Image 1 (cartoon, rainbow, N blue to C red):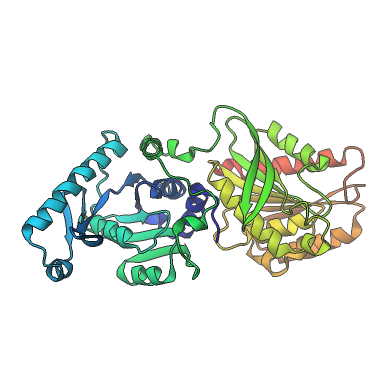
Image 2: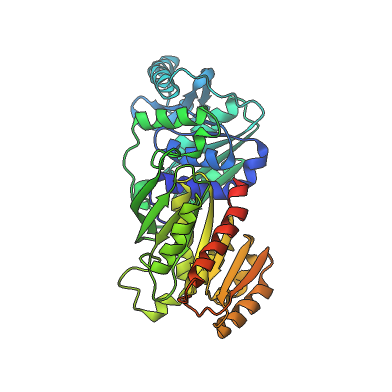
Amino acid sequence: MLFTDRADAGSRLAEALRHLEGEDPVVLGLPRGGVPVAFQVARALHAPLDVIVVRKLGVPYQRELGFGAIGEGGVRVISDDIVRRGRLDESDLASVEHAEAAELARQAERFRAGRQRLPLDGRTAIVVDDGVATGATAAAACEVARAQGAARVVLAVPVAPPDAAERLRTALDEFVCLSTPFAFSAVGEWYRDFSQTPDDEVVSLLAQAAEGPGASEGTPEGPAADEDVEQEVAIDAAGVRLTGDLMVPAGAGAVVMFAHGSGSSRHSPRNRLVAAALNDAGLGTLLFDLLTPAEENNRAKVFDIDTLAGRLADATGWLRGRTAGQIGYFGASTGAAAALQAAAGSGADVGAVVSRGGRPDLAGPHLSGVRAPTLLIVGGNDTMVIELNRAAQTALRCENQLEIVPGATHLFEEPGALQQVADLARDWFLTHLVKQV
Protein backbone atom coordinates (compact mmCIF):
# COMPACT_ATOMS: atom_id res chain seq x y z
CA MET A 1 0.00 0.00 0.00
CA LEU A 2 1.47 3.32 -1.10
CA PHE A 3 0.40 6.55 0.61
CA THR A 4 0.39 9.90 -1.15
CA ASP A 5 1.54 11.78 1.95
CA ARG A 6 0.95 11.85 5.70
CA ALA A 7 -2.49 13.48 5.32
CA ASP A 8 -3.58 10.66 3.02
CA ALA A 9 -2.19 8.05 5.44
CA GLY A 10 -4.01 9.69 8.33
CA SER A 11 -7.33 9.72 6.48
CA ARG A 12 -7.04 6.04 5.67
CA LEU A 13 -5.92 5.19 9.19
CA ALA A 14 -8.88 7.06 10.63
CA GLU A 15 -11.28 4.73 8.83
CA ALA A 16 -9.66 1.74 10.56
CA LEU A 17 -10.12 3.47 13.94
CA ARG A 18 -13.82 4.38 13.61
CA HIS A 19 -14.74 1.76 16.21
CA LEU A 20 -12.99 3.86 18.87
CA GLU A 21 -15.01 7.02 18.26
CA GLY A 22 -17.53 6.10 20.97
CA GLU A 23 -14.79 5.69 23.59
CA ASP A 24 -14.12 9.44 23.78
CA PRO A 25 -10.43 8.95 22.96
CA VAL A 26 -7.48 11.33 23.06
CA VAL A 27 -5.27 11.19 19.97
CA LEU A 28 -1.53 11.59 20.58
CA GLY A 29 0.85 12.25 17.70
CA LEU A 30 4.52 11.37 17.90
CA PRO A 31 6.61 14.30 16.72
CA ARG A 32 7.31 15.19 14.17
CA GLY A 33 6.00 13.02 11.34
CA GLY A 34 3.28 11.39 13.41
CA VAL A 35 1.44 14.64 14.08
CA PRO A 36 0.10 15.25 10.52
CA VAL A 37 -1.18 11.66 10.54
CA ALA A 38 -2.70 12.09 14.00
CA PHE A 39 -4.35 15.36 12.96
CA GLN A 40 -6.45 13.52 10.37
CA VAL A 41 -7.34 10.78 12.85
CA ALA A 42 -8.44 13.30 15.49
CA ARG A 43 -10.49 15.22 12.92
CA ALA A 44 -12.31 12.10 11.75
CA LEU A 45 -13.00 10.80 15.28
CA HIS A 46 -13.95 14.27 16.60
CA ALA A 47 -11.32 13.73 19.29
CA PRO A 48 -8.88 16.12 20.98
CA LEU A 49 -5.34 16.10 19.65
CA ASP A 50 -2.12 16.42 21.58
CA VAL A 51 1.51 15.62 21.04
CA ILE A 52 3.21 12.92 23.09
CA VAL A 53 6.81 13.86 23.68
CA VAL A 54 9.02 10.94 24.55
CA ARG A 55 12.78 10.77 24.86
CA LYS A 56 14.46 7.42 24.66
CA LEU A 57 17.21 6.81 27.20
CA GLY A 58 20.15 5.20 25.42
CA VAL A 59 22.96 3.22 26.99
CA PRO A 60 25.95 5.65 27.08
CA TYR A 61 28.28 3.44 25.08
CA GLN A 62 25.55 2.11 22.76
CA ARG A 63 23.00 4.87 22.21
CA GLU A 64 20.77 2.86 19.88
CA LEU A 65 20.10 0.44 22.76
CA GLY A 66 17.47 2.01 24.98
CA PHE A 67 17.31 1.24 28.67
CA GLY A 68 14.13 3.24 29.10
CA ALA A 69 12.21 6.36 28.21
CA ILE A 70 10.92 9.50 29.87
CA GLY A 71 7.81 11.53 29.26
CA GLU A 72 6.16 14.67 30.57
CA GLY A 73 4.93 14.86 34.11
CA GLY A 74 7.99 13.10 35.48
CA VAL A 75 7.05 9.78 33.85
CA ARG A 76 10.00 7.41 33.81
CA VAL A 77 9.92 3.95 32.25
CA ILE A 78 13.08 1.90 32.91
CA SER A 79 14.05 -1.61 31.81
CA ASP A 80 15.73 -3.09 34.87
CA ASP A 81 16.93 -6.02 32.78
CA ILE A 82 18.89 -3.81 30.35
CA VAL A 83 20.25 -1.71 33.21
CA ARG A 84 21.47 -4.87 34.92
CA ARG A 85 22.94 -6.46 31.80
CA GLY A 86 24.56 -3.18 30.77
CA ARG A 87 26.03 -2.77 34.24
CA LEU A 88 24.83 0.79 34.40
CA ASP A 89 25.21 2.63 37.69
CA GLU A 90 23.16 5.53 39.01
CA SER A 91 25.54 8.13 37.63
CA ASP A 92 25.15 6.67 34.11
CA LEU A 93 21.37 6.79 34.41
CA ALA A 94 21.32 10.28 35.85
CA SER A 95 23.57 11.84 33.20
CA VAL A 96 21.60 10.44 30.30
CA GLU A 97 18.26 11.24 31.88
CA HIS A 98 19.29 14.81 32.70
CA ALA A 99 20.28 15.56 29.11
CA GLU A 100 17.13 13.99 27.64
CA ALA A 101 14.84 15.70 30.18
CA ALA A 102 16.09 19.11 29.06
CA GLU A 103 15.39 18.29 25.41
CA LEU A 104 11.97 16.87 26.29
CA ALA A 105 10.98 20.08 28.08
CA ARG A 106 12.21 22.19 25.17
CA GLN A 107 10.24 20.20 22.60
CA ALA A 108 7.05 20.14 24.67
CA GLU A 109 7.13 23.91 25.15
CA ARG A 110 7.91 24.51 21.48
CA PHE A 111 5.15 22.27 20.13
CA ARG A 112 2.37 23.30 22.53
CA ALA A 113 3.18 27.01 22.54
CA GLY A 114 2.20 27.39 26.20
CA ARG A 115 -0.86 25.10 26.24
CA GLN A 116 -1.18 22.47 28.96
CA ARG A 117 -0.79 18.77 28.26
CA LEU A 118 -4.14 17.03 27.84
CA PRO A 119 -4.90 14.73 30.82
CA LEU A 120 -5.19 11.04 29.99
CA ASP A 121 -6.57 9.76 33.29
CA GLY A 122 -9.03 6.94 32.67
CA ARG A 123 -9.28 7.59 28.92
CA THR A 124 -8.40 5.69 25.77
CA ALA A 125 -5.17 7.04 24.29
CA ILE A 126 -4.56 6.51 20.56
CA VAL A 127 -0.83 6.93 19.92
CA VAL A 128 -0.17 7.68 16.24
CA ASP A 129 3.02 7.70 14.19
CA ASP A 130 3.66 7.82 10.44
CA GLY A 131 5.10 4.29 10.56
CA VAL A 132 7.45 2.15 12.62
CA ALA A 133 10.68 0.41 11.76
CA THR A 134 11.68 -1.31 15.02
CA GLY A 135 8.78 0.10 17.00
CA ALA A 136 10.95 0.99 20.00
CA THR A 137 10.01 4.66 20.18
CA ALA A 138 6.31 3.99 19.57
CA ALA A 139 6.28 1.29 22.25
CA ALA A 140 7.97 3.68 24.68
CA ALA A 141 5.34 6.32 23.89
CA CYS A 142 2.61 3.83 24.69
CA GLU A 143 4.24 3.01 28.03
CA VAL A 144 4.46 6.71 28.82
CA ALA A 145 0.77 7.19 27.94
CA ARG A 146 -0.11 4.34 30.27
CA ALA A 147 2.02 5.83 33.05
CA GLN A 148 0.25 9.17 32.53
CA GLY A 149 -3.03 7.51 33.46
CA ALA A 150 -4.54 6.17 30.22
CA ALA A 151 -6.92 3.29 30.91
CA ARG A 152 -6.41 1.85 27.44
CA VAL A 153 -3.62 2.45 24.94
CA VAL A 154 -3.94 1.89 21.19
CA LEU A 155 -1.01 2.28 18.81
CA ALA A 156 -2.02 3.18 15.24
CA VAL A 157 0.37 3.43 12.28
CA PRO A 158 -0.02 3.25 8.50
CA VAL A 159 2.87 0.84 7.88
CA ALA A 160 5.22 -1.47 9.78
CA PRO A 161 7.40 -4.52 9.02
CA PRO A 162 5.74 -7.84 9.92
CA ASP A 163 8.13 -8.72 12.76
CA ALA A 164 7.70 -5.37 14.52
CA ALA A 165 3.95 -5.54 14.00
CA GLU A 166 3.81 -8.95 15.63
CA ARG A 167 5.78 -7.76 18.67
CA LEU A 168 3.63 -4.67 19.09
CA ARG A 169 0.38 -6.57 18.62
CA THR A 170 1.15 -8.83 21.58
CA ALA A 171 2.45 -6.04 23.84
CA LEU A 172 -0.39 -3.50 23.56
CA ASP A 173 -4.11 -3.27 24.26
CA GLU A 174 -4.63 -2.82 20.52
CA PHE A 175 -2.38 -2.33 17.52
CA VAL A 176 -3.85 -0.98 14.28
CA CYS A 177 -1.69 -1.06 11.15
CA LEU A 178 -2.88 -0.71 7.55
CA SER A 179 0.03 -2.42 5.83
CA THR A 180 2.76 -4.88 6.91
CA PRO A 181 4.80 -5.46 3.72
CA PHE A 182 7.46 -8.15 3.77
CA ALA A 183 9.77 -6.13 1.51
CA PHE A 184 10.25 -3.43 4.15
CA SER A 185 13.43 -1.41 4.48
CA ALA A 186 12.25 2.05 5.59
CA VAL A 187 8.99 3.84 6.41
CA GLY A 188 9.58 6.50 3.75
CA GLU A 189 9.53 4.06 0.85
CA TRP A 190 5.78 3.61 1.38
CA TYR A 191 5.03 7.30 0.85
CA ARG A 192 5.12 9.21 -2.40
CA ASP A 193 5.84 12.37 -0.39
CA PHE A 194 7.79 11.72 2.81
CA SER A 195 9.36 15.13 3.13
CA GLN A 196 10.47 16.15 6.60
CA THR A 197 7.82 17.60 8.91
CA PRO A 198 9.15 20.90 10.30
CA ASP A 199 8.49 22.03 13.86
CA ASP A 200 6.34 24.88 12.56
CA GLU A 201 3.91 22.44 10.93
CA VAL A 202 3.54 20.51 14.18
CA VAL A 203 2.89 23.75 16.06
CA SER A 204 0.31 24.85 13.47
CA LEU A 205 -1.61 21.57 13.49
CA LEU A 206 -1.76 21.42 17.28
CA ALA A 207 -2.94 25.02 17.38
CA GLN A 208 -5.70 24.32 14.84
CA ALA A 209 -6.88 21.31 16.82
CA ALA A 210 -6.83 23.25 20.09
CA GLU A 211 -9.11 25.94 18.65
CA GLY A 212 -12.00 23.48 18.59
CA PRO A 213 -13.81 21.01 16.30
CA GLY A 214 -14.39 23.56 13.56
CA ALA A 215 -10.69 24.37 13.36
CA SER A 216 -9.78 20.70 13.11
CA GLU A 217 -11.95 20.24 10.03
CA GLY A 218 -9.31 21.64 7.69
CA THR A 219 -5.81 20.59 6.76
CA PRO A 220 -2.64 22.53 6.06
CA GLU A 221 -2.98 21.65 2.39
CA GLY A 222 -6.74 22.11 2.20
CA PRO A 223 -8.68 25.06 0.85
CA ALA A 224 -9.73 27.89 3.11
CA ALA A 225 -13.42 27.81 3.98
CA ASP A 226 -14.00 31.45 3.10
CA GLU A 227 -12.73 31.47 -0.49
CA ASP A 228 -13.34 29.56 -3.71
CA VAL A 229 -10.70 27.04 -4.70
CA GLU A 230 -10.20 25.94 -8.29
CA GLN A 231 -7.09 23.94 -9.11
CA GLU A 232 -5.69 21.02 -11.05
CA VAL A 233 -4.60 18.25 -8.72
CA ALA A 234 -2.52 15.08 -8.93
CA ILE A 235 -3.78 12.04 -7.05
CA ASP A 236 -1.86 8.86 -6.31
CA ALA A 237 -4.12 5.80 -6.49
CA ALA A 238 -2.47 2.41 -6.03
CA GLY A 239 0.76 3.82 -7.45
CA VAL A 240 -0.93 5.38 -10.50
CA ARG A 241 -0.88 9.15 -10.93
CA LEU A 242 -4.34 10.47 -11.76
CA THR A 243 -5.07 14.04 -12.83
CA GLY A 244 -8.16 15.92 -11.70
CA ASP A 245 -9.88 19.29 -11.50
CA LEU A 246 -10.99 20.35 -8.03
CA MET A 247 -13.57 23.10 -7.60
CA VAL A 248 -14.72 23.97 -4.08
CA PRO A 249 -16.95 27.04 -3.64
CA ALA A 250 -16.47 29.06 -0.46
CA GLY A 251 -18.36 27.43 2.40
CA ALA A 252 -19.06 24.21 0.48
CA GLY A 253 -20.69 21.63 2.72
CA ALA A 254 -19.74 18.64 0.58
CA VAL A 255 -17.70 17.55 -2.43
CA VAL A 256 -18.94 15.26 -5.21
CA MET A 257 -16.40 13.02 -6.98
CA PHE A 258 -17.09 12.16 -10.63
CA ALA A 259 -16.35 8.62 -11.81
CA HIS A 260 -16.31 8.75 -15.61
CA GLY A 261 -17.30 5.83 -17.75
CA SER A 262 -16.14 4.34 -21.02
CA GLY A 263 -15.17 6.84 -23.69
CA SER A 264 -15.36 9.75 -21.30
CA SER A 265 -12.99 11.84 -19.18
CA ARG A 266 -12.90 14.77 -16.82
CA HIS A 267 -13.14 17.01 -19.91
CA SER A 268 -16.56 15.58 -20.86
CA PRO A 269 -18.96 18.50 -21.51
CA ARG A 270 -21.82 16.41 -20.09
CA ASN A 271 -20.13 15.88 -16.75
CA ARG A 272 -18.90 19.46 -16.69
CA LEU A 273 -22.45 20.72 -17.13
CA VAL A 274 -23.57 18.65 -14.15
CA ALA A 275 -20.54 19.76 -12.12
CA ALA A 276 -21.32 23.42 -12.86
CA ALA A 277 -24.87 22.95 -11.60
CA LEU A 278 -23.54 21.42 -8.39
CA ASN A 279 -21.03 24.27 -7.97
CA ASP A 280 -23.82 26.82 -8.46
CA ALA A 281 -25.68 25.08 -5.63
CA GLY A 282 -22.65 25.46 -3.34
CA LEU A 283 -21.29 21.93 -3.69
CA GLY A 284 -17.66 21.16 -4.44
CA THR A 285 -16.68 18.84 -7.30
CA LEU A 286 -13.67 16.73 -8.20
CA LEU A 287 -13.56 15.60 -11.83
CA PHE A 288 -10.69 13.21 -12.44
CA ASP A 289 -9.73 10.36 -14.71
CA LEU A 290 -9.75 6.83 -13.30
CA LEU A 291 -7.68 5.65 -16.28
CA THR A 292 -4.42 6.99 -17.60
CA PRO A 293 -4.29 8.16 -21.25
CA ALA A 294 -2.52 4.92 -22.15
CA GLU A 295 -5.30 2.84 -20.56
CA GLU A 296 -8.31 4.65 -21.99
CA ASN A 297 -8.30 2.76 -25.30
CA ASN A 298 -7.94 -0.62 -23.62
CA ARG A 299 -11.46 -2.06 -23.44
CA ALA A 300 -10.43 -4.55 -20.77
CA LYS A 301 -9.33 -1.66 -18.56
CA VAL A 302 -12.55 0.25 -19.18
CA PHE A 303 -14.59 -2.68 -17.86
CA ASP A 304 -12.20 -3.62 -15.04
CA ILE A 305 -14.57 -2.47 -12.29
CA ASP A 306 -12.36 -3.82 -9.49
CA THR A 307 -9.49 -1.59 -10.60
CA LEU A 308 -11.71 1.44 -11.18
CA ALA A 309 -13.38 1.06 -7.78
CA GLY A 310 -10.03 0.60 -6.05
CA ARG A 311 -8.67 3.78 -7.60
CA LEU A 312 -11.82 5.68 -6.69
CA ALA A 313 -11.50 4.50 -3.07
CA ASP A 314 -7.84 5.62 -2.97
CA ALA A 315 -8.76 8.99 -4.47
CA THR A 316 -11.48 9.32 -1.84
CA GLY A 317 -8.88 8.86 0.89
CA TRP A 318 -6.78 11.55 -0.76
CA LEU A 319 -9.75 13.95 -0.88
CA ARG A 320 -10.85 13.20 2.67
CA GLY A 321 -7.54 14.57 3.88
CA ARG A 322 -8.26 17.87 2.15
CA THR A 323 -11.93 18.62 2.75
CA ALA A 324 -14.12 18.89 5.80
CA GLY A 325 -17.56 17.95 4.51
CA GLN A 326 -19.30 14.84 3.27
CA ILE A 327 -18.24 13.15 0.03
CA GLY A 328 -20.59 11.93 -2.69
CA TYR A 329 -20.10 9.99 -5.95
CA PHE A 330 -21.52 10.81 -9.40
CA GLY A 331 -20.92 7.89 -11.75
CA ALA A 332 -21.59 7.61 -15.48
CA SER A 333 -21.74 4.40 -17.52
CA THR A 334 -19.10 1.96 -16.15
CA GLY A 335 -18.08 4.68 -13.70
CA ALA A 336 -21.41 4.15 -11.95
CA ALA A 337 -20.48 0.54 -11.20
CA ALA A 338 -17.11 1.69 -9.87
CA ALA A 339 -18.84 4.27 -7.66
CA LEU A 340 -21.27 1.73 -6.23
CA GLN A 341 -18.58 -0.86 -5.63
CA ALA A 342 -16.35 1.71 -3.90
CA ALA A 343 -19.31 2.87 -1.79
CA ALA A 344 -19.86 -0.73 -0.69
CA GLY A 345 -16.27 -1.16 0.43
CA SER A 346 -15.29 -1.90 4.00
CA GLY A 347 -14.98 1.37 5.89
CA ALA A 348 -16.45 3.41 3.05
CA ASP A 349 -17.90 6.69 4.30
CA VAL A 350 -19.80 8.03 1.30
CA GLY A 351 -22.86 10.20 1.84
CA ALA A 352 -24.74 9.69 -1.45
CA VAL A 353 -24.38 8.21 -4.95
CA VAL A 354 -25.91 9.28 -8.27
CA SER A 355 -25.71 7.11 -11.39
CA ARG A 356 -26.29 8.72 -14.83
CA GLY A 357 -27.03 6.32 -17.66
CA GLY A 358 -25.02 3.89 -15.60
CA ARG A 359 -24.26 0.21 -15.56
CA PRO A 360 -24.85 -0.53 -11.86
CA ASP A 361 -25.32 -4.18 -12.77
CA LEU A 362 -21.54 -4.41 -13.29
CA ALA A 363 -21.08 -3.91 -9.54
CA GLY A 364 -22.70 -7.35 -9.14
CA PRO A 365 -22.68 -8.75 -5.60
CA HIS A 366 -21.37 -5.48 -4.19
CA LEU A 367 -24.75 -3.79 -4.69
CA SER A 368 -26.21 -5.27 -1.53
CA GLY A 369 -23.39 -3.73 0.50
CA VAL A 370 -24.04 -0.12 -0.57
CA ARG A 371 -25.21 1.95 2.38
CA ALA A 372 -25.28 5.40 0.78
CA PRO A 373 -28.61 6.69 -0.58
CA THR A 374 -28.49 6.01 -4.33
CA LEU A 375 -30.25 7.72 -7.24
CA LEU A 376 -30.34 5.94 -10.61
CA ILE A 377 -31.04 8.21 -13.62
CA VAL A 378 -31.79 6.63 -17.00
CA GLY A 379 -33.02 7.96 -20.34
CA GLY A 380 -36.55 6.93 -21.28
CA ASN A 381 -35.42 5.68 -24.71
CA ASP A 382 -32.44 3.74 -23.30
CA THR A 383 -34.57 0.61 -22.88
CA MET A 384 -31.81 -1.94 -22.29
CA VAL A 385 -30.14 0.18 -19.61
CA ILE A 386 -33.52 0.82 -17.96
CA GLU A 387 -33.94 -2.92 -17.44
CA LEU A 388 -30.37 -3.27 -16.14
CA ASN A 389 -31.00 -0.47 -13.65
CA ARG A 390 -34.30 -1.96 -12.51
CA ALA A 391 -32.59 -5.28 -11.88
CA ALA A 392 -29.79 -3.54 -9.97
CA GLN A 393 -32.35 -1.59 -7.93
CA THR A 394 -33.81 -4.82 -6.58
CA ALA A 395 -30.34 -5.79 -5.31
CA LEU A 396 -29.76 -2.50 -3.45
CA ARG A 397 -30.52 -2.55 0.28
CA CYS A 398 -30.00 1.18 0.81
CA GLU A 399 -32.42 4.06 0.25
CA ASN A 400 -32.71 4.29 -3.53
CA GLN A 401 -34.74 5.80 -6.35
CA LEU A 402 -34.96 5.31 -10.13
CA GLU A 403 -35.68 8.41 -12.24
CA ILE A 404 -36.42 8.03 -15.96
CA VAL A 405 -35.95 11.14 -18.11
CA PRO A 406 -38.64 10.97 -20.83
CA GLY A 407 -37.44 10.89 -24.44
CA ALA A 408 -33.74 10.80 -23.52
CA THR A 409 -31.21 8.38 -24.97
CA HIS A 410 -28.05 7.05 -23.35
CA LEU A 411 -26.00 10.28 -23.63
CA PHE A 412 -28.92 12.62 -22.77
CA GLU A 413 -28.19 14.70 -25.87
CA GLU A 414 -31.82 15.71 -26.40
CA PRO A 415 -32.73 19.37 -25.62
CA GLY A 416 -33.16 19.85 -21.88
CA ALA A 417 -32.41 16.23 -21.00
CA LEU A 418 -28.99 16.79 -19.46
CA GLN A 419 -30.30 19.77 -17.48
CA GLN A 420 -32.89 17.45 -15.96
CA VAL A 421 -30.05 15.11 -14.96
CA ALA A 422 -28.20 18.01 -13.36
CA ASP A 423 -31.29 19.15 -11.46
CA LEU A 424 -32.01 15.63 -10.19
CA ALA A 425 -28.40 15.10 -9.10
CA ARG A 426 -28.23 18.51 -7.41
CA ASP A 427 -31.40 17.91 -5.41
CA TRP A 428 -30.29 14.41 -4.38
CA PHE A 429 -26.89 15.58 -3.15
CA LEU A 430 -28.30 18.62 -1.35
CA THR A 431 -30.80 16.40 0.42
CA HIS A 432 -28.46 13.58 1.39
CA LEU A 433 -25.05 15.26 1.76
CA VAL A 434 -25.42 18.77 3.10
CA LYS A 435 -27.95 17.87 5.78
CA GLN A 436 -25.39 15.46 7.29
CA VAL A 437 -22.63 18.07 7.74
